[in-house]
Length: 108
Image (cartoon, rainbow, N blue to C red; front, side, top):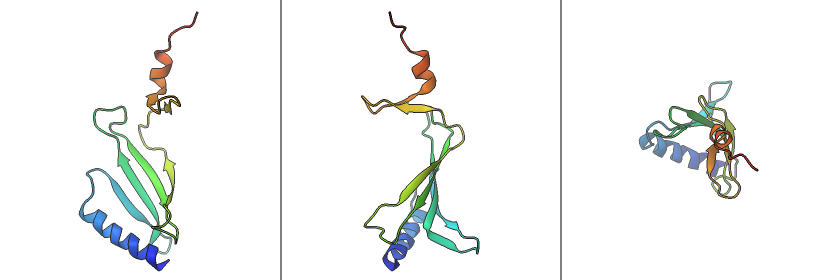
C-alpha cells in the first residue's frame, strides 16, 4: 500500500500545480478529518458550445493498494444539467435522447 499512497501523494502535488481550468480532483476527507488518498472526488466541466456546457459531471474514484499497477474503480454521480443521452452501438456516438426522438423518420 505504501507505493500506492506515495504515488497518489506525488500525483496530487502535480495536479495541484498544473490542472486544466474547471476540473478538480481531491481526496475525500474521512469522518475523523483525515484525507483518504485512496478515495477521491472529481469533477469534469461540460465543454463550452456543446449540449454539456454549464454542467458539472462528478466521479468518485476508488484506488486500491495495487495502484498504479491497477486502475482505480469509478462511479459516476449525476451532475447538474446533465442531458439524457444514449450511445449508438453502430457508431459509438453520443446523441441526446430528445434529438433522437424528435428526428425519427416515420416508417411506412
